[in-house]
Structures are given as structure tokens and as C-alpha cells.
Length: 65
Figure 1 (cartoon, rainbow, N blue to C red):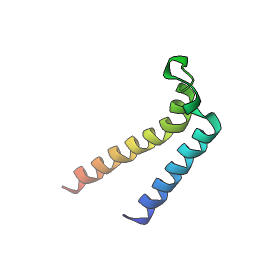
Figure 2 (cartoon, rainbow, N blue to C red):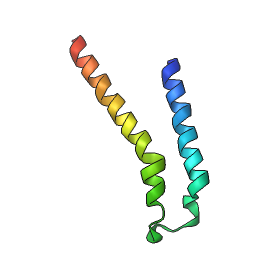
Figure 3 (cartoon, helix red, strand yellow):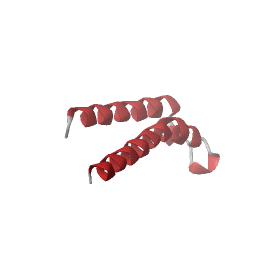
């Protein structure tokens, strides 16, 4: 795994873990709806960044062919 990819993996894990500790989504059932902030703040930005990087890689590969 390249160095940047390792860095992004660790940063993403720390981000999600930090928000999980702060928001404690495991204390609430899904019916209460209090897991939505964790999904929006904790997981959402990481998922968005991964999708953007995935799309960029696809464009880079298309240009190379």
C-alpha cells in the first residue's frame, strides 16, 4: 500500500473513531434517529472523499489508455 493511501486510511479511521467517541451512536436505537448525526458527520465526509478519489483515479486511467 503506498504511503499516501496508508495516511488516508489512518486519518479516516481516526476521524470516524473520534466522532464515534464524541457522539456515542451505540447508545441509541436506530428508531430514535440519533445515529444520523454520526452518519452525516463521522462517515459522510470520509465516504465522499473516497468517492471523489475513486472517480479521479478512473479519469486518470482513462486518459492513460
